[in-house]
Length: 548
Image 1 (tube, rainbow, N blue to C red):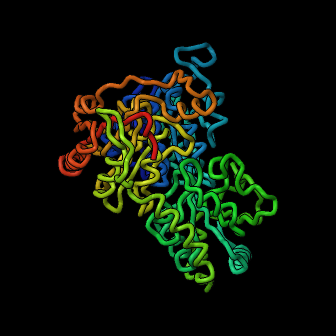
Image 2 (cartoon, rainbow, N blue to C red):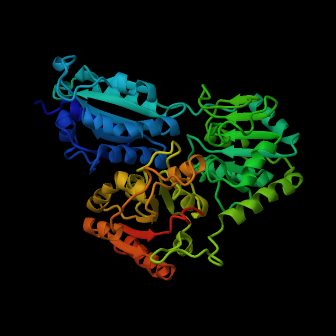
């Protein structure tokens, strides 16, 4: 095999694009890429299942704004990774999935683990590329990264035939392709200024893609200077700090009634990064009037997922808007005092640490999740990163854990389970100086919880708080609504999760009564922050008290 083969060229190109780590489940179909990683300086994070590896890459994309990279093998590996591709597509996350493939000569013969990447992934990706010429290896990486980052970000699949990877690379190393931020034209800015000047009840709706810490800070300054209330998209509640006087909550599942009412009542909605999709509009029930005034600021020219009226579409990223409105003071902050104060007061009451007075009784051997969350919130630093997947347990993280800096909340807006632990691993590796807390459910945890082994192996300390109610509670609640008192197919028998965590080499705690909460949280945080190893707090709760 030549010293400079296509597999090595791919790795060199990843390095040129600033990739510091890749998430890998190894396969014989891409050995040349694994060889290229040897002595490359890129950290190969060896994962235990392709779904976990791809989720880590997706979480990396959310955290950094740059494509996370996962490497999996053909057939079964690609199938397992598909869930993260679906999430990256719906959540607008930059992701590059490299898939080893069968040799070109074996195509269309029902070869071992053969599959058609176009047929499998075309409907859920921005591009599907297959490397058929070794000299184009670097070019393909550049194209994949450009597609993943540009416009509305999303996943890109790059197929790598085994035989092509081993061939000599004779092409040129392709430089990164710059991505446009869009722009706010003078006409756009004047329209926005005039609309806000004429508004009695304006509302900023923030979320979506292409945010940066600088954009978050600048949009926050603009909204605070002008006293404009802000609501967030579902599970994207870190664009404006949760303790800002303009922060009025989020929309979608688990939202407060006041946040939904403000969306309906606002005479002007300015959506930044986000668009009013299914979940924040309560299933296309809120803000659907054709007369609604909605200014949508998003670099996605297709407005994918939008519902309701569009008054003006500004094709720009949050960063481009931030630059355009820097220093803009409309002089109307006092005019909106009452409107803003209503939303802020409601959100403060809704998201304050759980009240531990007058808690309902629970059965013996169970604790209140409120007791554990209250102890945790009291000890969290301002820059904590929280992760959660899908299920009733997420409401505890979404509602009570602060989001004071961007980025600080990694979650699944597509409602996919099994995300919390892989996302926490990715966050702990990328931001080793920050505390990472994963809020997990008993059903959700065991979908990718084995990546705790990856966390231990690669030194990625985080705290997992596991709510064990012995059921798939979200489905149970829907079941009770449609078929009362006929519980079927939703009950679980769980292991001792604390012992399970210790078996991986993590710290494990069990909480079966409220009086155990403070000491368990304290010891777990000590393990994470001082001993630098993962920790898990297993909270056994009563099924009747499984959401706030």
